[in-house]
Length: 290
Ligand SMILES: Nc1ncnc2c1ncn2[C@@H]1O[C@H](COP(=O)(O)OP(=O)(O)OP(=O)(O)O)[C@@H](O)[C@H]1O
Ligand SMILES: [Mg+2]
Image 1 (cartoon, rainbow, N blue to C red):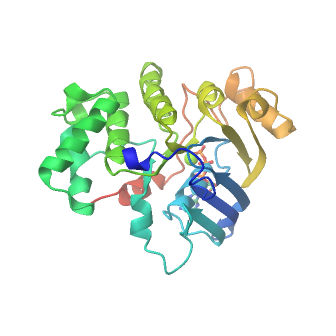
Image 2 (cartoon, protein in one colour):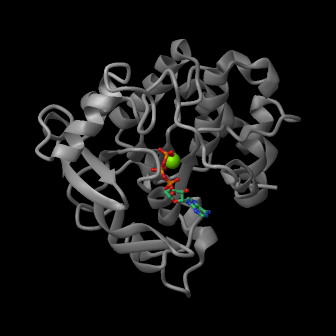
């Protein structure tokens, strides 16, 4: 943990994430049509945009859960799109948190936090449990280490999932709508944990529909539509005073869905956007450990 928190100028030159000319097609469908985005160390970048615009695909290309069709992705200076790269090693530096928590139902919170540490990082039980307890404390769940996922609320499960990712000592964290499957009253606790991570200097790329989070926590906001970045800048600009008509239209739908005629796209809570069919099993398939 300590060593992954980087401050100062020494590492300022190596961007945490550097995406250049990224394109991704699924068959005939071009989902990313040339994306350039940089996340510097310690920066929090929020990605917003309508359903189907390619936000999740962008995130999934960063740790090669999807293979880009063309373009390059660098994580802390390592080109992950280089066919020679040891992608497992790169992935270990990246924590990923999904909308669905993907916890192992047969393991306690503590067990969920230690299993990958032991199997992937080769840590012994005592060390893995010490790291796990430290991270359960970070997410405010010290008293839940013996709880099974079914005994935890959705918000608690998501905080366990965040603690699990943190237990691997990631240099950066990717979040894909971490709160959109949660009941509204549980969202705040998860956002508070994320805010705490941001305050500690964690580099974060966050897909979210939580505009207040984006406004308050993001250093930059990226608005995507139809596989392209339409607008990018500080939250005061992109969320507060968008320059592009498409950004304005999206925000008016998200910030006031009732007035905008329903949740057809880019829906804010309390109606989370529908997952495209066939996606959930894929996320399950690609969860960090079997
Ligand atoms: N594995 C896949 N195979 C085929 N098409 C896919 C696959 N994954 C995503 N797509 C399609 O790519 C497009 C972009 O999907 P993506 O999940 O990146 O959008 P999104 O912006 O995250 O949307 P949402 O806000 O609903 O999560 C969609 O049309 C989706 O159906
Ligand atoms: Mg998505």
